[in-house]
Length: 168
Image 1 (tube, rainbow, N blue to C red):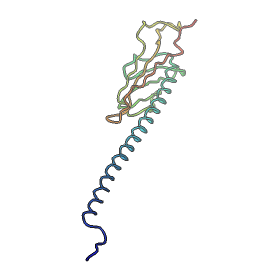
Image 2 (tube, one colour):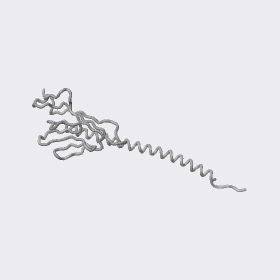
Image 3 (spheres, rainbow, N blue to C red):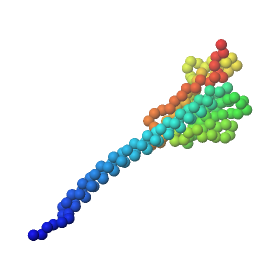
Image 4 (spheres, rainbow, N blue to C red):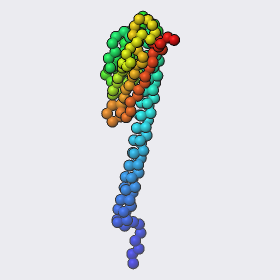
């Protein structure tokens, strides 16, 4: 009588198939977890960058003394605390800049949509009694990310310029 020792070919094939199935499911779960981590990281970084840009925009526009040009939906030119400087908040080429005189300072990139508007209702009034109609508020809104990396929400702020408020 022959005693067999070791594995038969069928046993070896069964082990290989089982290890393959376990490896496939493990790789699927690892890949799903890694993708979720990357999406969360990108969304968090984007939201943090958006919040910092909104804070900077609010700080800039809160000190408006006068508008130097009629605003468009993608730019706003104004004078702030230094009357010799003309500043412009603008959106072009998927980026948001603050231009001081002729120098652009990047605030945010990978912006998929951007709007800026000044108050239109009620009608403009001379709130600071200097003879010019003033802006009650400026609203800025944008979306971040391009294609599948887009953050699915708008970032908005409404700024009330402190130099254009009603004197009491």
